[in-house]
Amino acid sequence: MDMRSIFRHIIKVFCGILLVAGCAKISSPSGGPKDVDPPVVIKSVPENGTKNFKGKRIVISFNEYIVLDKINEKFMVSPPLGRRPQITIKGKNIIIQYTEELRDSTTYTFYFQDAVRDLNEGNAISNYQFVFSTGPVIDSLSVTGNVYKASDLNPPEATLISLYIEKEDSAFMKNLPSYISISDKNGYFRIDNVSAREYRIYALKDVDNSKNFNLADEEIAFLDSMVVVTPEKNWLPLPVDTLRPKLKNPKAADTIVLQGDYKLYLFQHQKKLHYLTSSSRGMAYRLNYTLSLPPDTSGFGFSIPGADSGSYYMEMNKTGDSIQVWLTDSSLYSRQIINSVINYPFTDSSGITALKEDTIMMRFMTPRATRGKTKPAPFRFTSNISSGTLKPGRHIILNSQTPFREPDTSKIRLLQAEGTNMIRLPFNLKKDSTNSCRLTLTAKLAMNKNYIFIADSASLGNIYGEQSDSTATRFTVKSEESYGKLVLNVMNYEGNRIIQLLTEAEKMLSEVFMEKDGKIEFPLLERGAYRVRVIYDLNNDGKWTTGDFYTKRQPEPVSYLPVDVDIKENWVREYDWDISEKNSKKLKIKPTQSRGRM
Image 1 (cartoon, rainbow, N blue to C red):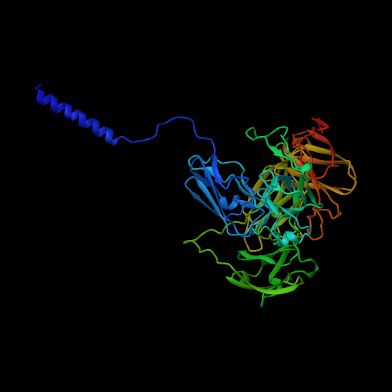
Image 2: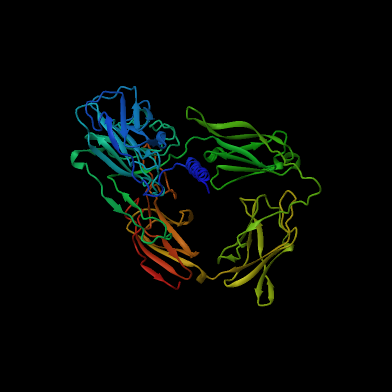
């Protein structure tokens, strides 16, 4: 190879290296620890904690670029301003501007909660506050507490807590608070930089963001006594360990909830205004009307102009605030539009309740039929034996979406299986007197026996001509040994109380009314976890009663059995339950007895 060829080869290699280098992607080195540190304030104008500040602009500088997460939800000023300050980001700075004149000799706290985060990883500054005073002193006292839902003692998130210098309760409805804060996800709240004096304290689910109680359906809480803030009572609470004794979910995290000095119980006023909530026509032959309150003695009237009263009938739910009208005349329910006339209680703007008459147009568009001949859909129903079991002492219940016609009992059989033999049993099948979409079958059924419920084709149907297909359901009546039992020895309270058995998700299953201490039983319980609640029935009306801000009535207190009850088959759980402490929801006691045979 001559020198010229060698030189050309070197040039090609060099150009190739340049080409590869030019196409290479420039990037930062990979690896290294992930940034987990929140932004750090390096300076502010004025300084945090400044006294005698009269300015209208605040600049807070950080050591890195930042973002504001849900700033409109999380940011607030205490004492509150009439107009919300303007908050902007410029580089690594937060700029706060306002035009409102501030109060003299007042400490202002700008709460950011966890809204300030770094740009890259979203690391938040926890509970960031900027404080200054328009006078020569920074108020440094605090008010702490916890807010709970009165009915179940669960903590409501993001509840506004307000302190008022004014002692009149009307201030809660008209004036801006003297100080505010927001409860955390566990219901704990802390109002900082408060001056020493007496206050009224309130909690509010601020639906309209007015910081006032001015909507009838807003949830509120109030304290019967004044809050007295003194330097001697200013304290930092210690975390109280509220670890549950045994968590069903091993991934569930233990919870440590701060306990403050004051307890507030959030409630919603009982509805007092009568009005029509909704009207609908989900089926051609069913009209639905919902009222804000049961009509009581004034009743509910319904008619269709030009239609005979025998061409429809009405049914109410148990509480009386929901009315269903079933149309039985095909010339009526075949109409796309029905003008219904209803009479119902209505409360006007002056607070007077009287019967009101309305004409409401009820529309239903029949779905477009598919091409070709289609077989009519059979009449469908459900039952409480579809799972294959029935509790001892229970009746067989059949439910449907439309009213049952009279059943043809000659085509229905109830058989008891005895080996290879089938014994036909007598039964009684009748409509529910208050619900035309339900049938109840009663018969003498023995425990530990196998049965078959057979309904031949067209034995059941609805009033609109739909007929059932033939069906056969096998089921067993279990023995008492297949279930568990809960026994409670309720003690240390004088007065009426309601003991409620709840699911683990706190849905009520059954309840027992008690006038005095003693034992009660909840038998025939399926395997699983349960909770128990007591309602202190102070007004003896047999139900939980909410509070009333205007009459200064607190909601009726409740408490929970301080354990999750674990029920097993053929086991009895027995507890001694001291209910002397009201509004208690702790988990601490062990069963008095836990035996394997009932």
